[in-house]
Amino acid sequence: MMKETEKISTSPKAQRADSGVQQVQRERSRRPSDAKHTTSHGHEAKRPVNDGKVSTTSTKAQRPPLTATPSQMDTQYVNMLLALDGIPKIHNMMASFFTWILLAGFVLFPGTFSSLQGFQTNLGQTELQVLNAVQQVPLFIVAWICSGIGALGMCYMWWRWMRNYVWLVNHIFLPGCLNALAGIISTLASVFGAQDGRFTTTSTITIAVTIVTAVICGILSGVYTFLIGRVKRQHDQMVGQQRAGKHGEGMVEKIKRKAYETEPESGVV
Picture 1: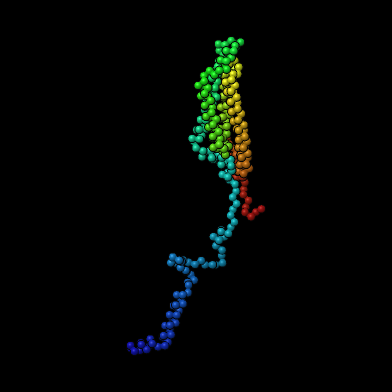
Picture 2: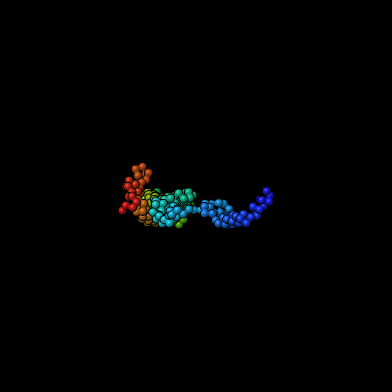
């Protein structure tokens, strides 16, 4: 039996069959698989099958980007309103302090005027000199210091937030104009009450300073109010007309009206 098996295994037909099997195995090992391929990390991944259809990812990548439409966040007017919350509270307090101390200086000026009480109608040279003199020099100096601090502080706040028109009008120019008007009224009341309508050197300086301050703040309030109106009109053209609403809730007329309109179907002109 052993001799027969040796003859069978060493026959030329068996040798040719073994060599053919080995050759097929070598070809299979060299040929890459059609269904699978190996990644660089040794992980087995499936090959994409091209069935004649275009993948959704390629179509999405080939689509042109949509054009961005202007929104409520893109207008200069809305940016100014949102920036009001970003301004430090210490600056709001400083603006209020500077406008208040300016008013304090204007109110202190009339307290330095001399009074005509005790003088007769026909004033002599001595009485006129007393009338033109400052009654309380320290109070007069304090009034000038307060007015100077207020004016310089308002100029600094104007330079610091010059791009926010809304903040400047509400915190600097409009309060400064109203405080200067209060100083004018206080000065006139002191002149016509205590000095019988006679303008002395001190009262003339005081009325001049208060009038100049009121005119400057009033002009700047008008200029920046005009700029706010122009920016607001641009916002209305892009977004819609803003209204306060019945209870201050706010509403946009154009946006609200378009919300009830039916949008046309795609592809229909």
